Length: 123
Image (tube, rainbow, N blue to C red; front, side, top):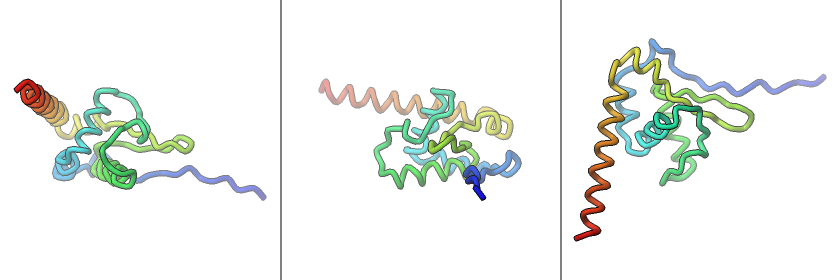
């Protein structure tokens, strides 16, 4: 008798279970915010290996778990790859404007930090 392996399914909060404080906690970390910015820019499902992060693989796994458990991203397995998608529709429905505001603020901060690095190089 042949048994087939069941697909791995990851637990996610339903839309009604997503809590503002958990979303804000997830977005408060620089590495996780970088992941979310990349996902928003690409607007597609991305594998974990797509992200070039300045942390170990185990730390990357931790960051994605925090994002998933907070309801910021949805993760699904496709074959051996774990794909990640931003839960923009859920976040926008629950917290209108929050994600766009956070992403705009993060982009402005990155611009300021880049300008500061450029100014330091010319000094």
